[in-house]
Length: 69
Image 1 (cartoon, rainbow, N blue to C red):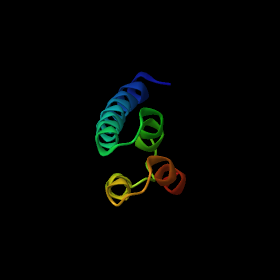
Image 2: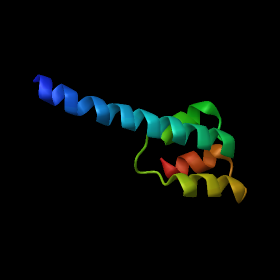
Image 3: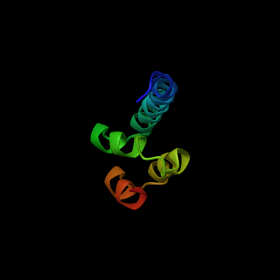
Image 4: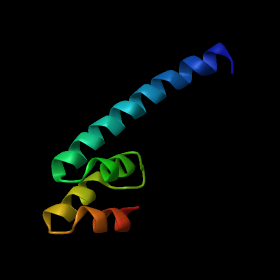
């Protein structure tokens, strides 16, 4: 990789890490156990608000994760 490519990728990686960390925090606060929250947080296909809403409507974290992932 060239130096320009490396410099371009670093901010993207840092931003992605920040977003995943924030998503993880929200999922844990919603009631997901850490291992499930980690899997959901890194999945860009999962709608965070829907994942939290599922728990607030009585879905277990395990069932929600099966549906979401």
